View (spheres, rainbow, N blue to C red):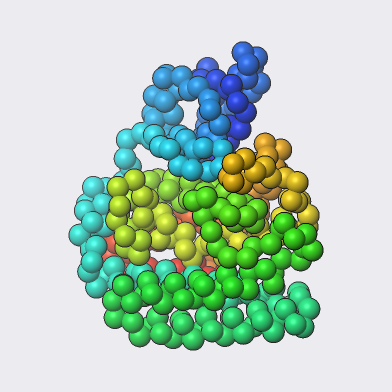
Length: 340
């Protein structure tokens, strides 16, 4: 099993990142701030206007360290990585089955995982909540179970997308019931993005970005093309397959994480800025979220299919590996991740 590597997040303005003696080094305003052994780093994520040395890009490419660039509210700009790993025949199979019956079954399994995990999060919150809120959460969980039955009988991906949209609306309609925060500025209201319309949505979008980066790196590491997906429509610049596999992981890994941050008051309404209607986390809050995210990734669980203990941060890699095994013919079906 692959070892969990670290993700280096560059959050400071006027940073200069370069390589030195097998280390990734960071200067801020011309002053050395960090030297990190390259073998401990899996990827580098830039979230501010920074400068990157050209030798660093080559250095990271040779060592399989991906580099991605984002705005400070998580908007994706671009990504670099080294030589593509894996067998070209695996990628050919990945492309060949687009719009096939096999891709339909992969999507069905992904969404089965998403629906089951969404229900788990709702029912877990219901057990820890007031009777009034618990009733709403349980009702939504029951409705998602009904959508799951419809999913199992759907015969095409377009139909599944429609069912998934209805289930997602049902899930997010009670998201506020899971937030134990009386601050009116920390209400979810409805899912919004590009740009997020409130602080909870800004926090969700940022955490989804962190997961997308991890998922994309995992797919690349097993030799799959993150852009060639089955559920999300193909579009230039969109990592459709990464978004596909993320669907089953959003509720248990991202949403529960955000709910915990808010309910434990680790992130509050004063941890955001609002400039010209664009809501984003403050620099201090970015660091808080990333520190908590990295700590969460180190916690171990027993993978429901592999029956092995793995760090939570390796779940994207495990699912990428299982999808690759299915495409190679080693598994009859893609096994989605079910949170226990």
